Amino acid sequence: MTEKPRRFDKIAFIAAATPEARTARERLIERYGDCPPEEADVIVALGGDGLMLQTLHRFMNARIPIYGMNCGSVGFLMNEYDENDLRARLAKAELNIIHPLRMVVRDRDNARFEALAINEVSLFRQTYQAAKLRISIDGKVRMDELICDGVLVATPAGSTAYNLSVRGPILPINAPLLALTPISPFRPRRWHGAIIPNTAHVRITVLEADKRAVSAVADHTEFRFVHEVEVRQAGDIDIYLMFDSGHALDERILAEQFRY
Image 1 (tube, rainbow, N blue to C red):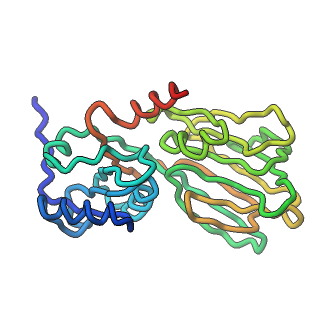
Image 2 (image 1 turned 30 degrees about the horizontal axis):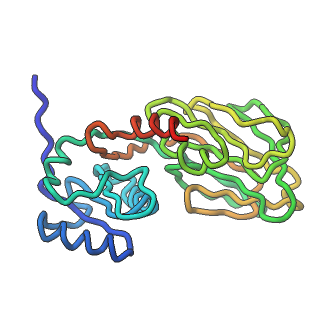
């Protein structure tokens, strides 16, 4: 049975604040029309990866496909900008379903907070003193004490972002894995991190928390003076990312590993 082609009659255009992105939005609306994002068949984000992350967070529970076109400086999550035959491109685009991370934080006042991350959850030292962290996976302590500037847990989609900058592994987009990567580790100096199942429950306990203050960040949501952070995949949340045929996220991640 032949699959029925997807239709994208109603398109919502969202642009970054840059003049280039705003001008592109005006031209595209003139050609293809516009509608409220909540009523759209697809959301087209115009900008860079920053704008794409904002859009994914904003519509995380809407179950609306999001297709990005690069009008910024960094566009790993974006397709090439082209105003022609947009509906045909959308109909042929490949759909990737990704899941965010859910971060649960307990701070020095024992207050509890939650946030979601599409790229990574990161812990950072807040002062000149290195952080001291204990890492547990699924209830078992795997590292009694990590002295470092911080540590992060990255999704496959986020493995080419900050995780790659701190020499973490690149993960294939469909791999059922997460990257656990230290940031400037001092002790143990030779520990470069771990690849863990995406079903893992990660618990990071801040040692000497009152003396060595640590913040926790889920993409761009930050909590300070944290004492404990739990991270696990939010498998109940589906995010739909669209890429031009032949240039899907798994291909981009593979190609990134051969850059030099």
